[in-house]
Amino acid sequence: MSRVVIDIETVPVDWEGLEPEEQAYLLQNARTDEEQEKVRDQLGLFPLTGRVVAIGMLNPESGKALVLAEGIPGEGAAWAFDEGTEFWTGNEAEILERFWDVVKRYGQIITFNGRSFDGPYLMLRSLVLGVVASRNLVPNRYRLSEHLDLLDVLTLYGGIRRYSLDFLCRRLGIDSPKGQMRGKDVAEAYRAGRMEDIARYCLEDVRATKQLLDRAEEALGVLVSGS
Picture 1 (tube, rainbow, N blue to C red):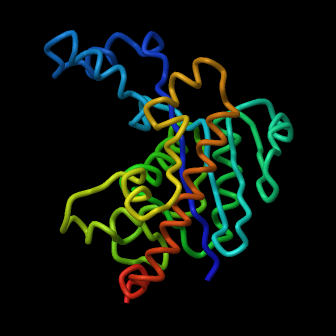
Picture 2 (cartoon, rainbow, N blue to C red; picture 1 turned 180 degrees about the vertical axis):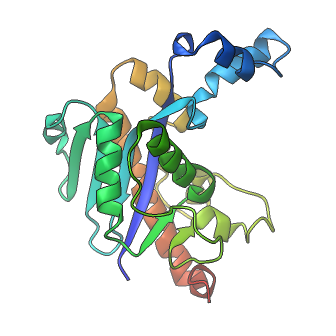
């Protein structure tokens, strides 16, 4: 079965670009200045108030990776710092269109928290932008042949507490992708124009997820296979 590991990076929309009614709706339960600031800081976590700026895709069998990142089409060629990795840039709608064209070629997608975050985010951003999705990224929770969410499986579907990818990697002796950058740093890096750094970070996330997959299959094959 053909498989692909997926991860995305997102940033918030411009707060001032929201209509007053939209701002009021988002702040309706925020009573203090701190709570209101938290709402603004977390806009990028939700697909109706955030945007996709990078999508990492890695074939676990071949090791080849594709990173789709916001930028000028063709600009990504200058980021070809790593053999086996292709960079491709465009606006958000263009990278989503390319993503849907590529992902339809694979039987199974593999993510870390993809059922709760990456999958819904990609689908709803496509809805906002009028981009046609080529498949359902959030199928039946237990149909692992379509979507294997390692966070879902390794927490035994909510049976134990959830751990971050960084913590799991550290405990399992896998190089953590959370070195120079973490998810909370992406928005600041984006504002600073550091798209190459964001693209590299996204690439490291899919590589770490692939290594976590390898460890899980080796020790817990019966669990991650859905048998």
